[in-house]
Image (tube, rainbow, N blue to C red; front, side, top):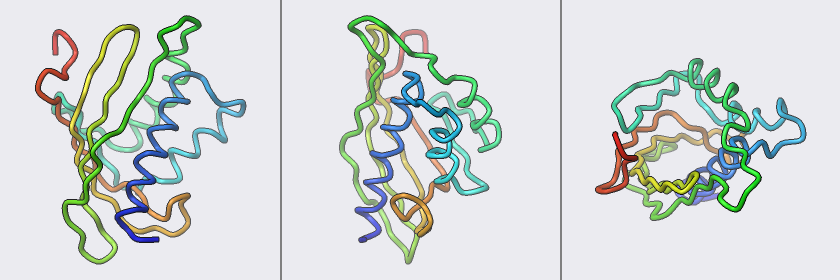
Amino acid sequence: MDLSKACEQEILGLHRFFEAWFNAGFADEDRGFRRFTDVMAPGFVIVSPRGVATALSELGRELRQAYGAWKHDGDDPWTIQVEDVKLRHQHGDVALLTYVEKQHARGHDTARLSTVLMERHDPTPNGVRWLHVHETWTPGGAPSGA
């Protein structure tokens, strides 16, 4: 598969995982969590919109503890929408992309622009893995108080 297309499919797929994870959508929590761990490079780091860099080991612990954190029985579930995925640069088996991630949670909407560095890695579901992410709030997209 074309690297750009593989990266886009992975971005969409991982965000579907996040949506299911935070809404307690896995019958087998350990197996479900592997959807996350299997696509992360060992040195993965994410920089949050607030400027905090988090390594994979800490992110994995935090994510594991947050299983079902947004489960809601009412009409207002936590959702994620990914838009405007664009390839910005490709060099061999490494690609830099941007995308907009919109979240809706309990009546509140946020939006962030994310830049992601990915590399081809055949054993993963979409043939790529995540190396680095840097997120920033879009104008008007930050939660109140951020």
